[in-house]
Length: 417
Image 1 (cartoon, one colour):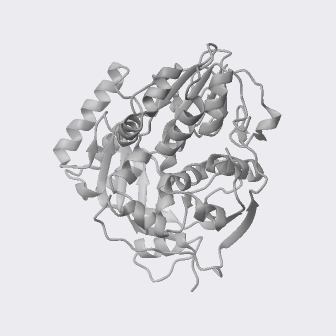
Image 2 (cartoon, helix red, strand yellow):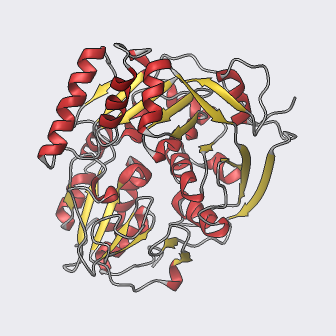
């Protein structure tokens, strides 16, 4: 039977020869991730089950990235509780406050490979589909079941394949492509669908750019984001993992497959305007909007390629006196690479603030809150009201290039100028 990539992965995980969209299966979990914000409830729920030990400590990853370093006594207590759980259960895959954002660290450390099922207590776990894994966010109480049994039930999703064709113009990136798609189909346009990104444009993208696409699948309602593994995937994994893996691809005649063609030849930089991710406009319609803060980072655009792009733009210039620019590398690896390339010095000399690898303002955490009436331009993935601080503030979303050029000007600025 012809199947989509999502169906093939679910068939394998549920130990069935075939699987069909709409079926409910009990799937074996290959990787289970929780972090400092959602982990405490996962552990508390696991304790209530009454089991002494987790099903497989080697398949569990615990990571601190949301409130790091601890910003309150409650956060500090959560960190202590999770550290004790990690030690008690013999969980070796533990990354304390120093390492960075979970969705960047897991692929870097070799935990993600094609064909596996990955769950995390974070909605943007779908990022890992860029490496060909079925990866999705789950609730903390669901994670307790995974801790106990190593299994979780799924309704197998139908697949929307976005056939992206065309050559991106200068200063147009994967972030602009996915914002354009979300603007076209809406925040609920792919509800509980596997969002598969394909086509010539996707094949030309780096693994980092593909992560941007998959990261924001949840913002159109998707269950997961997926990119078929290819030579770039294999090369990315070569020095990162010793895990064996199977490359699975979608059959073009799969029954549950819907294909949408996306032409990006004439795409200009895109901006998601307050207060919804699908309120997307071309930059020409919002250029000149005054801003108070720029956030370059997050699990969407805090990678080395993003920092390189932004540093190229700000080098030799000064951030506007009207703007606070926060630069937050997505991981310690990205931080060190940026340091070696002199990128962090460029940002510091331009007047930007370089912070430790973490989620930062993305969740309205302890770094970079925006106040009443302020406007933030962010490379992250959500701009809901109150997301980055005051409910009276506004958040716009953009690529790293737009963020950098806007920081210099003090208003939303087209980097092509």
